[in-house]
Length: 420
Image 1 (cartoon, helix red, strand yellow):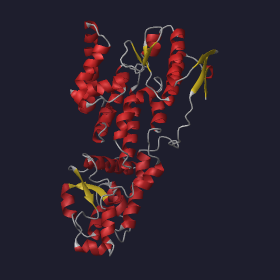
Image 2: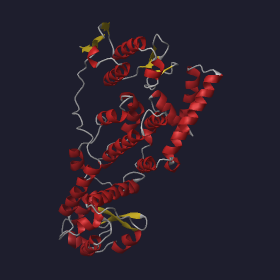
Image 3: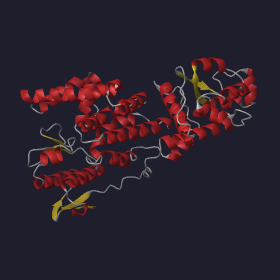
Image 4: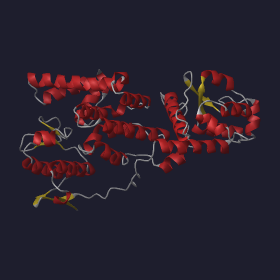
């Protein structure tokens, strides 16, 4: 319950609050909005609706759609709780039929792509605590999946070259509380992918729970040390827990293979039912050393980049130019602006005066920006009574403005901004 309320408040406010003060922040929200009894009852009803979405995220077996259920299970293995505030917004849009099923599935695929690539390159997870709470605000309400791909590649998204460079020597085994399940998900996905590429019409699954096998064993025997040569300690240190040295078998096979010599392991794996083993280890491999482990890593990376392809070319990170807005022109009407908040407010003000049914056409489509009550100090009230959230960066303001004028039917050419 505490985690749900915390993620609900994060979704509403765009800031992840301290888990020790969740109920105080919820009380503050109620008090700051001066809720009447009817308002509070509506808030509880809203909570109930989001609790049902949250339950499906935590327990995918409660999701009736099989495809969505499978994708949520995969995301849970990847420990994507930091994205729950964002996913609740997605689920609400889907529940209200503002997103189609196919769009929802595409969004889940994009999130998996992003999280897997960051996991494989050991990108820090604390970044996600700040990124996901405000992500929804940067997306077009009419093209959520399309704009998500474009926006998420600006969020420390690992490129193909990053993955090829980092993953060969990245120690992924034993990394994180769910490391085993994550590696199994990656390796199992590769196995399915290789089966599909072989046009076999299906793929093989293990008859018992999968476990991870180290080709070069975790405790090398004297025979393995001889096999690796005089530099065995360095090879062991550098490559033991890397992806090139890991594969999938059952626990029974894991016990049987254990510290077996490489020739024995190779022979067994070459005849293994999983394609990830048989396809690779049926090749002539004379020695299992650093070069061999690197070669297999590259083989697996090729598959990884096909399963989770680059969503786009990540932009080159540049230092801020320090530019500020100077003037704004909307449909021939000019405004003097001194801050990015002015740009967002003046754009929303023009739209509020232009669009007759602002509540349903604009506010309901961009509900993370508009509220009937002032819930943060960084809000300004429009003449029509709606409060506009303004704690936004320059880039986020531009994204907001382009999205809101598109909903209002204002051509892009009729919105012009000059910067210093």
